[in-house]
Amino acid sequence: MKKMLFAAIGAVLFLSLGAARAQNLSGTYLFAQRDTCDLYFDVYDPAPGSETAVDGVEKPSILFVFGGGFVGGERSNSGYLGWFRLMNENGYRVITVDYRLGLKGKKVSFSPTGLIKTAKNTVKAVEIGVEDLFSAVNYIVDNKEALGVDPDKIVLAGSSAGAIISLGAEYFISNGETIAKTLPEGFNFRGVISYAGAIVDDGGTPKYASAPCPTLLFHGIEDRLVQYNKLQVLKLGMWGSNVLAGIYAKNGYNYNIYRFVGHAHDIAANFIALWPYQDEFIRKNVMKGNRSIVDATVDDPSVPVWEAPTRDTLY
Image (tube, rainbow, N blue to C red; front, side, top):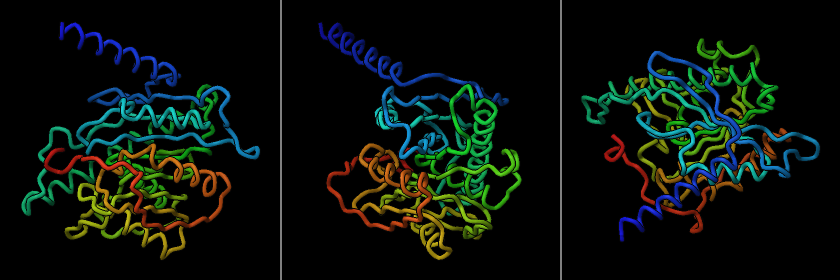
């Protein structure tokens, strides 16, 4: 009897999830074929009747890069669907992309002897992820009419490893790196949103040759998985949101940062609770082009806290 009950419950949950996906998912597209895998992205169109423009200005599409420590994760994980639906209902199109997992199958060690090798592998994983992201961008540009996407109005958003890729992508564009030259001439994102991200690189403290696009940073102050501050060995390192905000402030870049007291890496997946900050940033800094600079420390009990992955549990 119990088995039948659990089976029935499971069927209901499966059908409910399937209905949720069908309600929002408008298409799945193959954008690249690598030696190891095929890469796809899913498109979730704005909900019928939703507000897709503000004062005559069309809202941007959100290009999302999932998290998972470069060892796991899915582009349309069920945990993301509620957030996608919220954005769709508010008139935003969401495109969520695959990328190759550059640390999958590799030994990850944070011991004194293993840290440098892990750092080098992570730098390579970021580069691979950015390469795949740029392939997705090129596909979107080439098929913009069919997809209904304006390539000049794309906001890049990422969670955890996806946020590292997102910040890295804009860093490469701003510095005119070779990898960025695969993009159409003059292309840039209209904004970047980082849920617990960092710059991971082997060139020392990040320096931007040209100003990055408007950037929104979310980070838990107690995050030790993706560093809130920094972790550096020689020129190899991870420079987190706190350090990046200092660089942006010093150079007069357009940015918002929200630093969450009592939170660690859970901020990487706290999408719905942080939605109002995201929507405001897009409306003001992206759509209106304002330099509305926010540097805030947030102690808000209404933002959920849960046990997030750590180095030990993830690797």
